[in-house]
Image 1 (cartoon, helix red, strand yellow):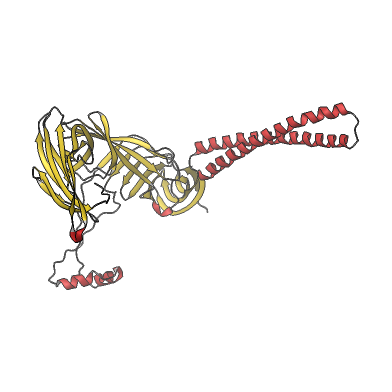
Image 2: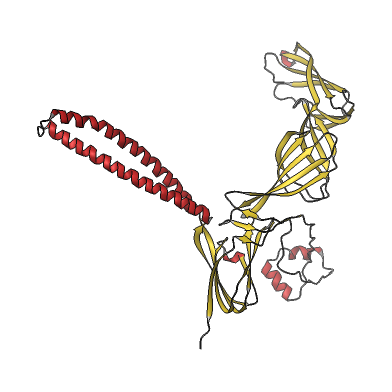
Length: 491
């Protein structure tokens, strides 16, 4: 008596059912339906992972009796690999043809040289034939040099393509399954990838007009380091990874043990704590809170390809914002604009492009924020709120210092003006510097008019003003310093 075992060989599907990408890593879910009954040996090749521990198998309508895993070097993308092999084959044929022509030319060069040497040594007496043959030698040398150059270029291209061919070979998994009591079974495969193997980056675009709402649109750029190209019919991006186990109840003990006991217990090793738990000594309970999930579902096929990142639209939202206008005329003659908004979803960090009044005004990395928390977003510079710094007055006089040294006393008065050129009123925060002294320079007098609303420390003063259209606000600043006469001072 013997048991008939069916052998089935197939490749892991090019397109899987779904992919889930979370901060902890990514998962691919694939189902393979088999038309067979009884005992089966199933071999699935081209798994996009070289790590067997990261592959989970589930069998419906059958029992998984045994499983094996090995790896094999295979092309990353079969079509690209075949095209590359065709190019290499064409170049190799061309190289062989050039080598044959080169051998032919070198044969004639050697033959002519030998014949001419014979004439020179008196073995030939036809001077006309000698002159005819000697005239053909330069042409043969030119042809040889040209063929050598072509051959060198061909060899360089072949080396490059062969190197690329080797890089296109990756370690891919082969899984073998022994299934018993099969009745048209379905094999479910789940492949886990640690963070960095399959992920995504958001790309934001912000559109804002002065005094209006802010519109944010987001794209997802998918980044793959998988050993082969794979597509997914559905992609889910979430900040909470899926769980493969159900939580279980743990007794909650309330005890009157003193705090020192708890401190001591926290220093125990995991093995000791496990042993103590067996004896019935209660453990300190831990309470975890599940965050609210941000989840994007993309119901279209996405291809994960390391050679060509995929892009998908995520969302487009409009938010009410509070505009903040800041101006620091000593750094920039234009005000910079930020808005405060409260997103209704977690916004991961990613590159952001801002279009302020229709023009690109900022392009930088946005750190991201959590839902329902106020965040401040920089939008760039506003050309309609301007600042200006003018030197109104400068005086220098010599004075006597200590130990009969001669000092220079220098006084400068600046006028710092900001102007609202918008068509509507705006609240503007103005920053002005207060200097410190270094070396042999001393600040002996400083004053601003009007008085600042706040001294923020670190030499920064602040005013908040409401300006109507076309209105200006001015601060006068007086600085008096002394320094040894003849010294060069940097202001």
